[in-house]
Amino acid sequence: MEQELLIPNHIGIIMDGNGRWAQERGLIRTMGHKHAVGILKELCIHMADVGVNYCSLYAFSTENFKREITEVDFLMNLFISSFNKEFDFIKKKKVRVLFSGRREPLPNKVLEAMDQLVEETKNNTELTLNICLNYGSHAEMVDTTKKICEMYKNGVISLDDITEELIQKNLYQDLPPLDFVIRTSGELRLSNFMMYQASYAEFYFPKVYFPDFNNEEFDKAIIEYNKRNRRFGGVK
Ligand code: FPP
Image 1 (cartoon, protein in one colour):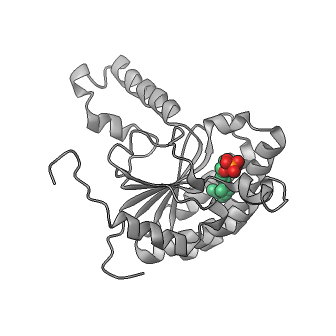
Image 2 (cartoon, helix red, strand yellow):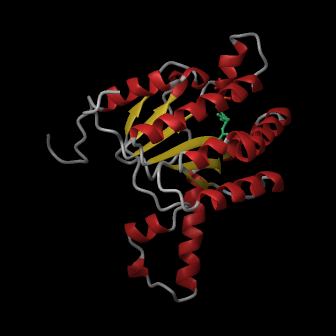
């Protein structure tokens, strides 16, 4: 990639289109998720190399539990094998992994694999990978509100202490705002992904399905980001 390009500090990726990618090849939907892990691995290495500081990935939404049990089970097992094995590259690339989302009702084996990855990568200083798993913005608002109400009830804070900064500090993770949100597959929706954090993000909707979103597609996205004029509510 050209050196002079501005790299967004925090990128969000909605990894959409795995099912369609597989179906168009006459495969079962879950093969799309399997293939996506390889692409994700390459992408993370590339992001660390080009100097992305934070990347939030939408891996599983609170609503995804409504899918067929076979697909949910497949994804849970894929998370376990990815975090235990496929994600070994993460340690070499000094990637720090965090998770956002509700722990309930994730299976214990998934939670154990998540906790282990967080622990093993906690001192890493390159790309921070925030994996949104059993995540929803609405759920995050509820959980953040509950935490703040609890502090108020216990006398830790007063009403005047409830500021934007306090809300930010009590989200699942206290990360910088999203600069750039990419949703693959051509769908033009946010689907409950980091709505609070995306207030001033730029959006990009490439038509390719996630299993085809390779490093070349990522570089095209960065070129597109560099064409945007970000004003944050100010004038040109
Ligand atoms: C959306 O595509 C994708 C998902 C719900 C799952 C995302 C999971 C992965 C990419 C697996 C690897 C992730 C990690 C963190 C190891 P879809 O199934 O909705 O596709 P469709 O819209 O074509 O049906």
